[in-house]
Image 1 (cartoon, chains in turn red, cyan):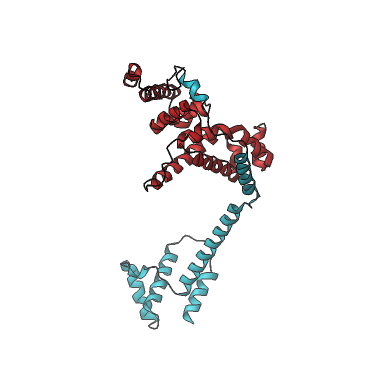
Image 2 (cartoon, each protein chain N blue to C red):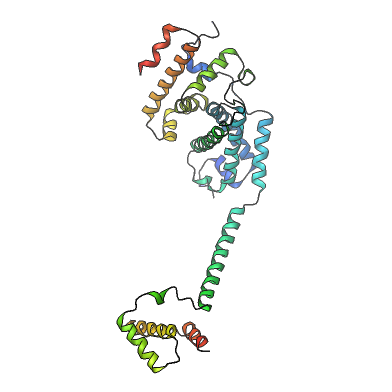
Length: 186
Length: 135
């Protein structure tokens, strides 16, 4: 049973109402998909993972009354699902099939976007995750801190560091030697 | 601006880069999957109950088979205390037809009874076993 005074969306989910699940998807689906795409670098994998998360929510709907922060819950679920998918994909990619990480213009559009995507994919997974959660997920540093089990200050400084590295990678890729020394500042 | 030149406002540039969206067929796909999951009967509770029931039945069968087959759970292999051995010998002397295992069992019961605090008599189950064995 939903707790009295709880989020009506959660109450609807616990009751198993279809409209509540549609509302849940409309509210959180876009940001989850963006984050999943940045984490996994594959539209196909990102879509599968986000679908897994939402179907998982349906499966455990009876326990959702105990969830205090639905957004944090969903992003935590997404992280787990994306990690599992990444591990599986890494094993699959041991076989020389298709380079799924290679960005395609069809996926991301303009040349500048392509450059951004390439730079993001060069980032270490932890830093890419921070950028994904902050920029694509729209999470606050406090929320990211809760998700990653670190302090908000640490999350903020790591995010800035990730941006610096990303900026340096973009500069290197566009051959601007006067700004390439930013990476070594930290 | 040169399209390949990084801007200082990298954060906003990242925020506005084109990313996959959830509109159209993908939304329908996820909603359909959620609907299918909603329509599925909540089998976990049923399976949990079935699992517990099966475990209870297996346990009951196991115990009853142990009793029926006179399983001693390797008790006979333990070195018996001197007092117990003496009781077994006394019982065998009194009743030579009694098997070694049976005498040992009686001796154990006698010792347990001697050391037990007064309690309501639990007669039905052990008596039936002993009677069955004698038959």
